[in-house]
Image 1: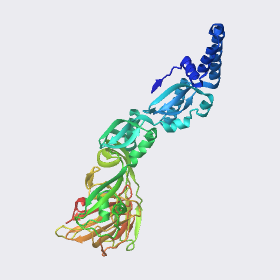
Image 2: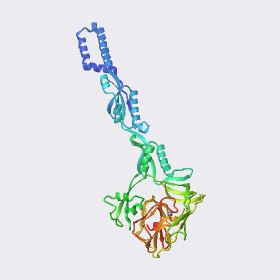
Image 3: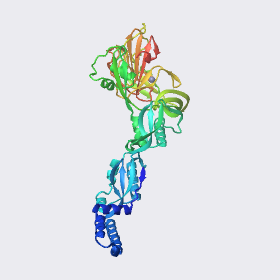
Length: 485
Ligand SMILES: [Zn+2]
Protein backbone atom coordinates (compact mmCIF):
# COMPACT_ATOMS: atom_id res chain seq x y z
CA UNK A 1 0.00 0.00 0.00
CA UNK A 2 1.33 3.37 -0.93
CA UNK A 3 0.28 6.45 0.94
CA UNK A 4 0.58 9.25 -1.51
CA UNK A 5 -0.04 12.68 -0.16
CA UNK A 6 -0.69 15.66 -2.35
CA UNK A 7 0.17 19.09 -1.09
CA UNK A 8 -2.42 21.67 -1.94
CA UNK A 9 -0.88 24.90 -2.99
CA UNK A 10 -3.35 27.49 -2.08
CA UNK A 11 -1.68 30.34 -3.98
CA UNK A 12 -1.22 28.36 -7.18
CA UNK A 13 -4.85 27.51 -7.03
CA UNK A 14 -5.79 31.19 -6.87
CA UNK A 15 -3.62 32.10 -9.80
CA UNK A 16 -5.15 29.34 -11.92
CA UNK A 17 -8.61 30.47 -10.87
CA UNK A 18 -7.79 34.02 -12.00
CA UNK A 19 -6.57 32.75 -15.36
CA UNK A 20 -9.71 30.78 -15.91
CA UNK A 21 -12.09 33.54 -15.15
CA UNK A 22 -9.75 36.15 -16.73
CA UNK A 23 -10.49 38.23 -13.67
CA UNK A 24 -6.82 39.11 -13.50
CA UNK A 25 -6.82 40.29 -17.11
CA UNK A 26 -9.84 42.46 -16.51
CA UNK A 27 -8.27 43.86 -13.43
CA UNK A 28 -5.02 44.62 -15.28
CA UNK A 29 -6.94 46.34 -18.11
CA UNK A 30 -8.79 48.38 -15.60
CA UNK A 31 -5.57 49.53 -13.95
CA UNK A 32 -4.29 50.76 -17.34
CA UNK A 33 -7.25 53.13 -17.81
CA UNK A 34 -6.73 54.95 -14.56
CA UNK A 35 -3.85 56.82 -13.03
CA UNK A 36 -1.61 54.30 -11.42
CA UNK A 37 -0.13 56.73 -8.96
CA UNK A 38 -3.41 57.82 -7.41
CA UNK A 39 -5.01 54.46 -7.45
CA UNK A 40 -2.05 52.34 -6.45
CA UNK A 41 -3.19 51.93 -2.87
CA UNK A 42 -6.84 51.22 -3.66
CA UNK A 43 -5.83 48.78 -6.43
CA UNK A 44 -3.80 46.70 -4.07
CA UNK A 45 -6.69 46.77 -1.66
CA UNK A 46 -9.11 45.61 -4.36
CA UNK A 47 -6.82 42.81 -5.44
CA UNK A 48 -6.58 41.66 -1.85
CA UNK A 49 -10.37 41.73 -1.50
CA UNK A 50 -10.91 39.73 -4.68
CA UNK A 51 -8.35 37.15 -3.58
CA UNK A 52 -9.92 36.88 -0.16
CA UNK A 53 -13.45 36.61 -1.56
CA UNK A 54 -12.52 33.83 -3.95
CA UNK A 55 -10.67 32.05 -1.15
CA UNK A 56 -13.65 32.22 1.15
CA UNK A 57 -15.93 30.96 -1.63
CA UNK A 58 -13.54 28.08 -2.33
CA UNK A 59 -13.32 27.09 1.32
CA UNK A 60 -17.06 27.26 1.76
CA UNK A 61 -17.93 25.04 -1.23
CA UNK A 62 -15.15 22.38 -1.07
CA UNK A 63 -13.94 19.87 1.49
CA UNK A 64 -10.75 17.92 2.13
CA UNK A 65 -11.15 14.19 1.49
CA UNK A 66 -9.14 11.01 0.91
CA UNK A 67 -9.80 9.00 -2.24
CA UNK A 68 -9.43 5.23 -1.81
CA UNK A 69 -7.82 3.91 -4.96
CA UNK A 70 -7.74 0.14 -5.48
CA UNK A 71 -5.63 -1.09 -8.38
CA UNK A 72 -5.88 2.37 -9.95
CA UNK A 73 -9.67 2.72 -9.59
CA UNK A 74 -11.07 5.41 -7.35
CA UNK A 75 -13.68 3.55 -5.29
CA UNK A 76 -14.86 6.56 -3.30
CA UNK A 77 -13.92 9.13 -0.68
CA UNK A 78 -13.36 8.96 3.05
CA UNK A 79 -13.27 12.08 5.25
CA UNK A 80 -9.62 11.65 6.19
CA UNK A 81 -6.67 9.30 6.02
CA UNK A 82 -7.34 7.72 9.44
CA UNK A 83 -10.91 6.86 8.54
CA UNK A 84 -9.90 5.60 5.10
CA UNK A 85 -7.39 3.23 6.67
CA UNK A 86 -9.90 2.12 9.32
CA UNK A 87 -12.50 1.35 6.63
CA UNK A 88 -9.96 -0.80 4.75
CA UNK A 89 -8.97 -2.63 7.94
CA UNK A 90 -12.64 -3.28 8.73
CA UNK A 91 -13.20 -4.68 5.23
CA UNK A 92 -10.17 -6.99 5.56
CA UNK A 93 -11.39 -8.09 9.01
CA UNK A 94 -14.80 -8.88 7.60
CA UNK A 95 -13.25 -10.79 4.70
CA UNK A 96 -11.22 -12.88 7.15
CA UNK A 97 -14.10 -13.27 9.61
CA UNK A 98 -14.70 -16.96 8.81
CA UNK A 99 -11.13 -17.72 9.86
CA UNK A 100 -11.17 -15.27 12.76
CA UNK A 101 -8.32 -13.30 11.26
CA UNK A 102 -7.73 -10.10 9.31
CA UNK A 103 -7.38 -10.99 5.66
CA UNK A 104 -4.49 -9.68 3.61
CA UNK A 105 -4.54 -8.48 0.04
CA UNK A 106 -2.01 -8.08 -2.69
CA UNK A 107 -4.20 -5.48 -4.39
CA UNK A 108 -2.60 -2.03 -4.67
CA UNK A 109 -4.43 0.29 -2.26
CA UNK A 110 -3.59 3.99 -2.37
CA UNK A 111 -4.90 6.88 -0.31
CA UNK A 112 -5.06 10.14 -2.22
CA UNK A 113 -5.53 13.34 -0.22
CA UNK A 114 -7.68 15.72 -2.27
CA UNK A 115 -9.90 18.76 -1.94
CA UNK A 116 -13.19 18.33 -3.76
CA UNK A 117 -16.58 19.97 -4.05
CA UNK A 118 -18.80 19.08 -1.12
CA UNK A 119 -21.44 17.87 -3.54
CA UNK A 120 -19.04 15.43 -5.22
CA UNK A 121 -17.92 14.18 -1.84
CA UNK A 122 -21.50 13.64 -0.69
CA UNK A 123 -22.31 11.58 -3.77
CA UNK A 124 -19.13 9.50 -3.73
CA UNK A 125 -18.62 8.48 -0.11
CA UNK A 126 -16.84 5.15 -0.07
CA UNK A 127 -19.08 2.11 0.54
CA UNK A 128 -17.66 -0.79 2.61
CA UNK A 129 -19.75 -3.22 0.50
CA UNK A 130 -18.11 -1.99 -2.69
CA UNK A 131 -14.68 -2.35 -1.10
CA UNK A 132 -15.58 -5.82 0.22
CA UNK A 133 -16.42 -6.95 -3.30
CA UNK A 134 -13.53 -5.16 -4.99
CA UNK A 135 -10.60 -6.10 -2.79
CA UNK A 136 -9.32 -9.65 -3.35
CA UNK A 137 -8.41 -11.07 0.05
CA UNK A 138 -6.09 -13.89 1.00
CA UNK A 139 -5.11 -15.73 4.15
CA UNK A 140 -1.81 -17.41 4.81
CA UNK A 141 -2.83 -20.98 5.59
CA UNK A 142 -1.31 -24.42 5.81
CA UNK A 143 -2.24 -26.98 3.18
CA UNK A 144 -2.17 -30.71 3.85
CA UNK A 145 -0.90 -32.77 0.94
CA UNK A 146 -1.36 -36.53 0.89
CA UNK A 147 1.03 -38.39 -1.41
CA UNK A 148 1.72 -35.04 -3.11
CA UNK A 149 -1.98 -34.49 -3.74
CA UNK A 150 -3.49 -31.33 -2.26
CA UNK A 151 -6.39 -32.16 0.08
CA UNK A 152 -7.30 -29.34 2.47
CA UNK A 153 -6.18 -25.95 3.87
CA UNK A 154 -6.20 -24.93 7.52
CA UNK A 155 -5.57 -21.60 9.15
CA UNK A 156 -2.28 -22.50 10.77
CA UNK A 157 0.37 -25.11 11.35
CA UNK A 158 -1.16 -25.81 14.79
CA UNK A 159 -4.60 -26.41 13.29
CA UNK A 160 -3.15 -28.72 10.64
CA UNK A 161 -1.39 -30.68 13.39
CA UNK A 162 -4.63 -30.79 15.43
CA UNK A 163 -6.55 -32.28 12.50
CA UNK A 164 -3.97 -35.03 12.03
CA UNK A 165 -3.93 -35.73 15.78
CA UNK A 166 -7.75 -35.87 15.82
CA UNK A 167 -7.67 -38.31 12.89
CA UNK A 168 -5.21 -40.58 14.70
CA UNK A 169 -7.24 -40.44 17.91
CA UNK A 170 -10.44 -41.26 16.01
CA UNK A 171 -9.02 -44.57 14.87
CA UNK A 172 -6.74 -45.51 17.77
CA UNK A 173 -9.04 -44.54 20.68
CA UNK A 174 -6.35 -44.69 23.34
CA UNK A 175 -7.50 -45.39 26.89
CA UNK A 176 -6.39 -47.03 30.11
CA UNK A 177 -7.24 -50.36 28.51
CA UNK A 178 -5.79 -49.54 25.11
CA UNK A 179 -2.18 -48.50 25.30
CA UNK A 180 -1.21 -47.27 21.84
CA UNK A 181 2.53 -47.71 21.42
CA UNK A 182 2.79 -46.24 17.95
CA UNK A 183 0.56 -44.62 15.37
CA UNK A 184 1.67 -43.38 12.02
CA UNK A 185 0.23 -42.62 8.63
CA UNK A 186 0.70 -45.05 5.79
CA UNK A 187 0.61 -42.16 3.33
CA UNK A 188 3.24 -39.52 2.82
CA UNK A 189 1.95 -36.28 4.34
CA UNK A 190 3.40 -32.83 3.76
CA UNK A 191 2.28 -29.49 5.15
CA UNK A 192 2.88 -26.46 2.99
CA UNK A 193 2.31 -22.73 3.40
CA UNK A 194 -0.31 -21.45 0.99
CA UNK A 195 -2.09 -18.18 0.27
CA UNK A 196 -5.78 -18.80 -0.33
CA UNK A 197 -9.12 -17.04 -0.25
CA UNK A 198 -10.42 -17.13 3.36
CA UNK A 199 -13.45 -19.13 2.10
CA UNK A 200 -11.14 -22.02 1.22
CA UNK A 201 -9.76 -22.31 4.75
CA UNK A 202 -11.45 -25.15 6.67
CA UNK A 203 -11.99 -25.51 10.40
CA UNK A 204 -10.45 -28.46 12.22
CA UNK A 205 -13.79 -30.31 12.22
CA UNK A 206 -14.45 -29.63 8.53
CA UNK A 207 -10.96 -30.75 7.54
CA UNK A 208 -11.32 -33.90 9.67
CA UNK A 209 -14.56 -34.80 7.87
CA UNK A 210 -12.96 -34.22 4.48
CA UNK A 211 -10.01 -36.47 5.32
CA UNK A 212 -12.31 -39.15 6.71
CA UNK A 213 -14.82 -39.07 3.88
CA UNK A 214 -11.97 -39.51 1.46
CA UNK A 215 -12.00 -39.67 -2.25
CA UNK A 216 -12.93 -41.93 -5.09
CA UNK A 217 -10.08 -44.25 -5.96
CA UNK A 218 -10.22 -46.04 -9.27
CA UNK A 219 -8.18 -49.11 -10.12
CA UNK A 220 -8.16 -51.83 -12.74
CA UNK A 221 -8.78 -55.43 -11.78
CA UNK A 222 -8.02 -58.41 -14.00
CA UNK A 223 -10.67 -61.09 -13.68
CA UNK A 224 -9.27 -64.42 -12.45
CA UNK A 225 -10.61 -67.90 -13.19
CA UNK A 226 -13.80 -68.64 -11.20
CA UNK A 227 -14.25 -64.98 -10.24
CA UNK A 228 -17.71 -63.56 -9.74
CA UNK A 229 -18.70 -59.98 -8.90
CA UNK A 230 -19.34 -61.16 -5.39
CA UNK A 231 -15.93 -62.79 -5.07
CA UNK A 232 -14.17 -59.75 -6.57
CA UNK A 233 -16.01 -57.61 -4.03
CA UNK A 234 -14.79 -59.89 -1.24
CA UNK A 235 -11.19 -59.80 -2.43
CA UNK A 236 -11.24 -56.02 -2.55
CA UNK A 237 -13.26 -55.35 0.58
CA UNK A 238 -16.13 -53.85 -1.41
CA UNK A 239 -19.84 -54.41 -1.86
CA UNK A 240 -20.91 -56.46 -4.88
CA UNK A 241 -23.23 -53.66 -6.02
CA UNK A 242 -20.35 -51.17 -5.93
CA UNK A 243 -18.20 -53.43 -8.13
CA UNK A 244 -21.03 -53.58 -10.67
CA UNK A 245 -21.81 -49.84 -10.41
CA UNK A 246 -18.19 -48.97 -11.19
CA UNK A 247 -18.58 -50.50 -14.66
CA UNK A 248 -21.29 -48.74 -16.69
CA UNK A 249 -23.48 -51.21 -18.55
CA UNK A 250 -22.80 -54.04 -16.13
CA UNK A 251 -25.61 -55.81 -14.30
CA UNK A 252 -25.43 -58.69 -11.86
CA UNK A 253 -26.07 -60.98 -14.85
CA UNK A 254 -23.12 -59.68 -16.89
CA UNK A 255 -20.75 -62.55 -17.62
CA UNK A 256 -17.11 -61.78 -16.94
CA UNK A 257 -14.24 -63.76 -18.43
CA UNK A 258 -10.85 -64.56 -16.91
CA UNK A 259 -8.30 -62.01 -18.13
CA UNK A 260 -10.97 -59.34 -18.63
CA UNK A 261 -10.09 -55.98 -17.08
CA UNK A 262 -12.80 -54.31 -15.02
CA UNK A 263 -12.83 -51.07 -13.03
CA UNK A 264 -12.90 -50.98 -9.26
CA UNK A 265 -14.25 -47.65 -8.05
CA UNK A 266 -14.29 -47.14 -4.33
CA UNK A 267 -14.35 -44.28 -1.89
CA UNK A 268 -11.69 -44.51 0.76
CA UNK A 269 -10.36 -42.14 3.42
CA UNK A 270 -7.41 -40.01 2.41
CA UNK A 271 -5.34 -41.27 5.30
CA UNK A 272 -4.61 -44.67 6.84
CA UNK A 273 -3.45 -44.82 10.44
CA UNK A 274 -1.30 -47.83 11.24
CA UNK A 275 -1.36 -48.30 14.99
CA UNK A 276 0.29 -50.80 17.28
CA UNK A 277 -0.52 -51.33 20.90
CA UNK A 278 -1.86 -53.48 23.69
CA UNK A 279 -5.50 -53.90 24.60
CA UNK A 280 -7.02 -55.38 27.70
CA UNK A 281 -10.54 -56.62 27.07
CA UNK A 282 -13.13 -58.56 29.00
CA UNK A 283 -14.33 -61.46 26.90
CA UNK A 284 -17.12 -63.92 27.24
CA UNK A 285 -16.12 -67.58 27.37
CA UNK A 286 -19.00 -69.35 25.66
CA UNK A 287 -20.12 -72.50 27.37
CA UNK A 288 -19.59 -75.87 25.78
CA UNK A 289 -22.52 -78.03 24.84
CA UNK A 290 -22.19 -81.73 25.58
CA UNK A 291 -24.70 -84.22 24.25
CA UNK A 292 -25.22 -87.54 25.97
CA UNK A 293 -27.28 -90.35 24.62
CA UNK A 294 -29.98 -91.42 27.06
CA UNK A 295 -31.75 -94.61 26.02
CA UNK A 296 -34.60 -93.85 28.42
CA UNK A 297 -35.60 -90.88 26.29
CA UNK A 298 -37.78 -91.20 23.24
CA UNK A 299 -36.03 -91.26 19.86
CA UNK A 300 -35.13 -87.77 18.65
CA UNK A 301 -36.13 -86.19 21.96
CA UNK A 302 -33.65 -84.09 23.91
CA UNK A 303 -33.64 -82.64 27.41
CA UNK A 304 -31.32 -80.03 28.88
CA UNK A 305 -29.87 -81.71 31.97
CA UNK A 306 -27.69 -78.83 32.94
CA UNK A 307 -28.07 -75.28 31.68
CA UNK A 308 -24.89 -73.79 30.29
CA UNK A 309 -23.48 -70.54 31.60
CA UNK A 310 -20.95 -68.32 29.89
CA UNK A 311 -17.69 -67.60 31.63
CA UNK A 312 -15.60 -64.47 31.54
CA UNK A 313 -11.93 -63.77 30.97
CA UNK A 314 -9.62 -60.79 30.79
CA UNK A 315 -7.51 -61.00 27.69
CA UNK A 316 -4.42 -58.90 27.02
CA UNK A 317 -3.30 -58.83 23.43
CA UNK A 318 -0.92 -56.98 21.17
CA UNK A 319 -2.38 -55.72 17.93
CA UNK A 320 -1.69 -54.00 14.67
CA UNK A 321 -4.60 -52.01 13.27
CA UNK A 322 -5.22 -50.07 10.09
CA UNK A 323 -7.77 -47.31 10.57
CA UNK A 324 -9.12 -49.22 13.55
CA UNK A 325 -9.41 -52.52 11.68
CA UNK A 326 -7.48 -55.38 13.21
CA UNK A 327 -4.69 -56.65 10.99
CA UNK A 328 -2.98 -58.92 13.52
CA UNK A 329 -3.78 -59.91 17.09
CA UNK A 330 -1.55 -61.81 19.47
CA UNK A 331 -2.77 -62.87 22.88
CA UNK A 332 -0.12 -62.27 25.52
CA UNK A 333 -2.15 -62.99 28.65
CA UNK A 334 -5.47 -64.60 29.53
CA UNK A 335 -6.98 -64.51 32.96
CA UNK A 336 -10.19 -66.41 33.63
CA UNK A 337 -12.48 -64.47 35.94
CA UNK A 338 -15.52 -66.77 35.76
CA UNK A 339 -15.31 -70.37 34.54
CA UNK A 340 -18.02 -71.32 32.03
CA UNK A 341 -20.53 -74.04 32.94
CA UNK A 342 -21.12 -76.79 30.36
CA UNK A 343 -24.58 -77.30 28.97
CA UNK A 344 -25.46 -80.95 29.13
CA UNK A 345 -28.13 -82.23 26.78
CA UNK A 346 -29.53 -85.69 27.03
CA UNK A 347 -30.78 -87.10 23.74
CA UNK A 348 -32.90 -90.09 22.94
CA UNK A 349 -31.53 -92.91 20.75
CA UNK A 350 -30.91 -92.62 16.99
CA UNK A 351 -29.20 -89.26 17.26
CA UNK A 352 -28.34 -87.46 14.06
CA UNK A 353 -25.31 -89.26 12.63
CA UNK A 354 -22.17 -87.27 13.34
CA UNK A 355 -20.03 -87.05 10.29
CA UNK A 356 -16.61 -88.49 10.95
CA UNK A 357 -14.97 -89.79 7.84
CA UNK A 358 -14.60 -87.92 4.59
CA UNK A 359 -14.32 -89.37 1.15
CA UNK A 360 -10.73 -89.93 0.13
CA UNK A 361 -9.48 -88.36 -3.04
CA UNK A 362 -7.15 -85.94 -4.75
CA UNK A 363 -8.13 -83.10 -2.40
CA UNK A 364 -8.61 -80.78 -5.32
CA UNK A 365 -11.59 -78.60 -5.89
CA UNK A 366 -12.12 -75.84 -8.37
CA UNK A 367 -14.32 -72.85 -8.22
CA UNK A 368 -14.95 -72.59 -4.51
CA UNK A 369 -16.66 -69.30 -3.63
CA UNK A 370 -16.93 -67.36 -0.40
CA UNK A 371 -19.93 -68.59 1.57
CA UNK A 372 -20.55 -65.15 3.11
CA UNK A 373 -19.65 -61.57 2.20
CA UNK A 374 -17.96 -59.91 5.14
CA UNK A 375 -14.63 -59.13 6.74
CA UNK A 376 -12.56 -61.95 8.18
CA UNK A 377 -12.43 -61.48 11.93
CA UNK A 378 -10.23 -64.46 12.68
CA UNK A 379 -7.87 -66.31 10.38
CA UNK A 380 -6.88 -69.94 10.12
CA UNK A 381 -4.00 -71.02 12.31
CA UNK A 382 -2.69 -70.33 15.81
CA UNK A 383 -4.97 -67.65 17.18
CA UNK A 384 -6.07 -66.70 20.64
CA UNK A 385 -3.84 -69.22 22.30
CA UNK A 386 -5.30 -72.13 20.34
CA UNK A 387 -5.51 -73.51 16.84
CA UNK A 388 -8.28 -72.00 14.78
CA UNK A 389 -9.43 -74.62 12.30
CA UNK A 390 -11.21 -72.25 9.91
CA UNK A 391 -11.85 -68.62 9.18
CA UNK A 392 -14.44 -66.47 10.89
CA UNK A 393 -16.41 -64.27 8.51
CA UNK A 394 -18.24 -61.45 10.21
CA UNK A 395 -21.97 -61.30 9.67
CA UNK A 396 -25.28 -60.52 11.33
CA UNK A 397 -27.69 -63.07 12.71
CA UNK A 398 -30.15 -64.11 10.03
CA UNK A 399 -27.88 -63.23 7.11
CA UNK A 400 -27.94 -66.06 4.57
CA UNK A 401 -24.76 -67.87 3.65
CA UNK A 402 -24.21 -70.16 0.69
CA UNK A 403 -22.49 -73.40 -0.23
CA UNK A 404 -18.88 -72.72 -1.30
CA UNK A 405 -19.18 -75.42 -3.97
CA UNK A 406 -21.71 -77.98 -5.07
CA UNK A 407 -21.84 -81.25 -3.16
CA UNK A 408 -23.80 -83.43 -0.84
CA UNK A 409 -24.83 -82.38 2.66
CA UNK A 410 -23.45 -85.07 4.97
CA UNK A 411 -24.37 -83.41 8.24
CA UNK A 412 -26.79 -80.67 9.23
CA UNK A 413 -27.56 -80.18 12.89
CA UNK A 414 -26.16 -79.36 16.31
CA UNK A 415 -22.52 -80.23 16.82
CA UNK A 416 -21.12 -79.07 20.21
CA UNK A 417 -18.98 -75.96 20.00
CA UNK A 418 -19.87 -75.58 16.33
CA UNK A 419 -23.50 -75.07 17.28
CA UNK A 420 -25.88 -75.57 14.39
CA UNK A 421 -23.55 -76.54 11.57
CA UNK A 422 -23.37 -78.12 8.15
CA UNK A 423 -20.83 -80.39 6.49
CA UNK A 424 -20.84 -80.69 2.70
CA UNK A 425 -18.88 -83.36 0.86
CA UNK A 426 -17.68 -82.02 -2.48
CA UNK A 427 -15.99 -85.22 -3.61
CA UNK A 428 -12.26 -85.71 -4.19
CA UNK A 429 -11.77 -85.75 -0.42
CA UNK A 430 -12.93 -82.15 0.03
CA UNK A 431 -15.44 -81.24 2.73
CA UNK A 432 -16.54 -77.81 3.94
CA UNK A 433 -18.00 -76.92 7.32
CA UNK A 434 -20.30 -73.99 8.19
CA UNK A 435 -20.73 -73.34 11.92
CA UNK A 436 -22.60 -71.23 14.54
CA UNK A 437 -25.75 -70.95 12.38
CA UNK A 438 -29.01 -69.55 13.69
CA UNK A 439 -30.92 -71.67 11.18
CA UNK A 440 -30.12 -74.52 8.81
CA UNK A 441 -31.90 -74.61 5.44
CA UNK A 442 -30.68 -78.03 4.35
CA UNK A 443 -30.85 -81.61 5.58
CA UNK A 444 -28.30 -84.41 5.52
CA UNK A 445 -28.38 -86.36 2.26
CA UNK A 446 -29.46 -83.39 0.21
CA UNK A 447 -27.49 -82.27 -2.85
CA UNK A 448 -26.68 -78.56 -3.01
CA UNK A 449 -25.43 -76.27 -5.74
CA UNK A 450 -22.57 -73.81 -5.46
CA UNK A 451 -23.99 -70.48 -4.26
CA UNK A 452 -27.18 -72.05 -2.89
CA UNK A 453 -28.32 -70.63 0.45
CA UNK A 454 -27.83 -73.39 3.01
CA UNK A 455 -28.21 -71.60 6.35
CA UNK A 456 -28.40 -68.34 8.25
CA UNK A 457 -25.63 -66.71 10.25
CA UNK A 458 -25.90 -66.96 14.01
CA UNK A 459 -23.89 -67.32 17.18
CA UNK A 460 -24.78 -70.81 18.35
CA UNK A 461 -22.27 -73.11 20.03
CA UNK A 462 -18.90 -71.76 21.14
CA UNK A 463 -19.17 -68.32 19.64
CA UNK A 464 -18.68 -64.78 20.90
CA UNK A 465 -20.77 -63.03 18.28
CA UNK A 466 -22.64 -63.51 15.04
CA UNK A 467 -20.30 -64.89 12.42
CA UNK A 468 -19.81 -67.81 10.09
CA UNK A 469 -17.02 -70.18 10.99
CA UNK A 470 -15.96 -71.74 7.70
CA UNK A 471 -13.64 -74.73 7.37
CA UNK A 472 -12.16 -76.56 4.45
CA UNK A 473 -11.29 -80.16 5.29
CA UNK A 474 -9.15 -82.17 2.90
CA UNK A 475 -8.83 -85.89 3.48
CA UNK A 476 -9.91 -85.37 7.08
CA UNK A 477 -7.60 -82.47 7.99
CA UNK A 478 -8.44 -78.79 8.02
CA UNK A 479 -6.55 -76.54 5.68
CA UNK A 480 -6.41 -72.77 5.32
CA UNK A 481 -9.64 -71.90 3.45
CA UNK A 482 -7.99 -68.78 2.00
CA UNK A 483 -5.87 -71.04 -0.17
CA UNK A 484 -9.03 -72.40 -1.76
CA UNK A 485 -11.14 -69.30 -2.20
ZN1 LIG B 1 -14.10 -69.82 14.05
